[in-house]
Structures are given as C-alpha cells and as structure tokens.
Image (cartoon, rainbow, N blue to C red; front, side):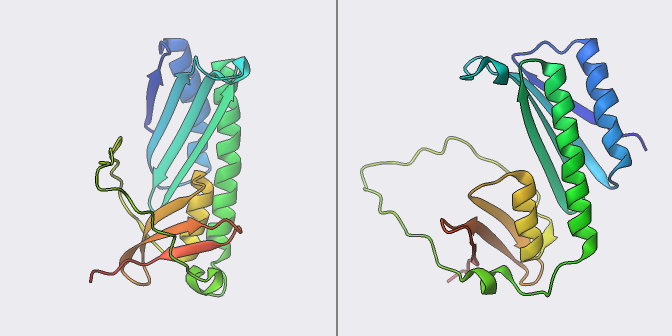
Length: 190
C-alpha cells in the first residue's frame, strides 16, 4: 500500500513542484519501515530565525504501531531542508530498527537504574493564575521503560516523555535529570 503523505505549510505557498518533490522523496521511506499509519510533513518559513540559512524548515513525522519518529531540518532552501530531513529520517529509522529488533537488554526497569527522585515542587502564589497556552492530545502505545527512553531520544524530547507502561498498566512520566540519568514518575491515585 503506498504511503499517504499529509503536507502542512506555514508561511509557504504549496505549489505542485514542492508537493511532487515531497511525495517523491518521502515515499522512499515506506520501503524502510512497515506499519506506518500516518506520515506528516510540515514545511515552514520562519522569518524571525536569527540565521538566514535557518529560515526554511522541514519536519517529518512518522506514526505507526508502537512508534513515533520525528525529524526537523533547517536550510536556506526548502528543497535542501526536505533532502536533509529525509536523510536524517532514514538514519532515525535505521537506528530504531536496530534497537527494536536487537532486543531490550536484561529487563531491568529504568526506575531501578536511574534511582527515582521526584522533581521539586514549586509553590505558586494564590494570586497568580496559571495560563494554559496549549492543550495537546495523543494516543499512548504500551511500552516498557527502555522503549520509552528510546522513543524519548528518537522524538528529540529533552525534558520528559509520557507513556503507558505495559509492565505496570499505568501512565508514567519519564524525565531526564541534570546529571544525565533518567527518572520515572509512577503516579498513584490516593
């Protein structure tokens, strides 16, 4: 089945030349990985970028059964940004497939390895009302702690990753600590 590619743009006119180029380049990824359910390509022109060579942005997101892979590349030419993003995604897929099919280690949970310490709670003044600037919904795929660490790295999330822990049947939050280790928050309703 051919890959269905959704293209979204911001501050760029999507003409036939760009659409055909994206379809030609991104459809090659279909041969590298199976079970891709959604392929999204975001193209943007960021006028406020500090460097003029970083104004054209191409982001590719692949969603499938149990994985989300995302890459972003910037260039002074949208076609170069697309090429670089596709190359980076190919490396990402190779890395994912290598780790996914090689095995999952000795089964030691990340919480035992990292030593879980809850992040410090910040006190808020009663007068200040927090503003929720964005709400996001997403589907959680069951995975263990090691898969969650890998997904966190593949997505480029620096601070935290929310996932459904298949071992405990609960939603957990994985976060990166200042010393480079990981922490795992296992919420309980009390």
